[in-house]
Length: 154
View 1: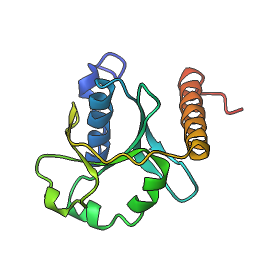
View 2: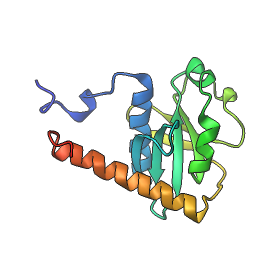
View 3: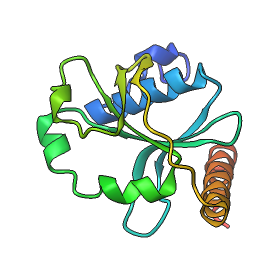
View 4: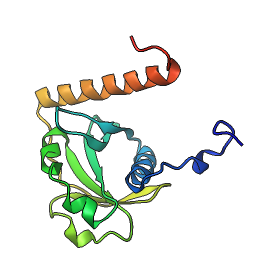
């Protein structure tokens, strides 16, 4: 069976963090959010998942596949300026006591996710929101175009 005829669940991403991203995007889609993975809001930053909610709210979700993945993350506080709420997404085996207070928590696997601790809301300023939404839209549109016309680079 080739990749085009395989069931979607058979096409799991190869790495644990990517599997968490997939589950997070599915779980947030059930909450009427749309998501982009690996979004660069500013030079030097790359969020695992940025989600846009039905009322324009912006969430950033960092997926951590284990203790060493979390401990080696030195950039996460830089993401706080680019969202209304910040979450960690981990699997059920992750030692959640490592995660900082004042952040949200999502439990996820490759198929779904559940928000178990809501992150505090820190609304973006109007000017920052405009930049974030434009970046989100342009990234999404560019990726869609690449899927629809993969041979064209502009």
